[in-house]
Amino acid sequence: MPEPLTELRVILAGFHRPWWVAGEWALDLAVGWATREHDNVEIAVLFDHQNELRVALPTWDLWIMHDGRLSRWRRDELIELPRHQLWSRRAADAPCGLEARAVADEHLEDRLVYLEQPLQ
Image (cartoon, rainbow, N blue to C red; front, top):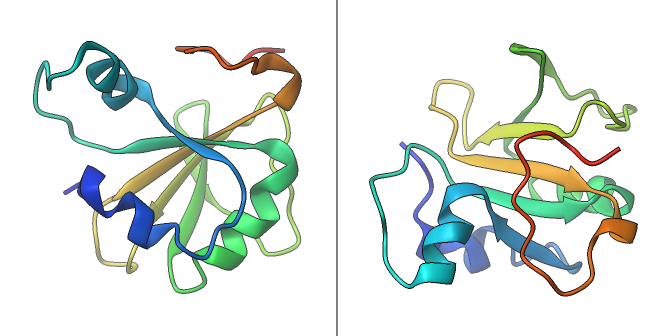
């Protein structure tokens, strides 16, 4: 079950960097209503802030999704393109509750960007 959208501020209270609602929820927020039920909540963070995100979620189970495969996000590992997607859950036996996509700051200019594939 996804984390409630209304809980994002609480979940990310320790993350003192910019973040954005991403994916399908971002589109729903832009149009002003939920267009359908969602099976995840996605956020976007800057690549340069990924370690701070890890610190803000110290007890979460963190995984990198790439090419349809999950691999544990190791403490000494940086997510770099083409990898850009993080799956996280509150506990190892819980479903994915929060998905994060890392984006490069040169692609953000106060605009809505919806990506199926990462910008390269």
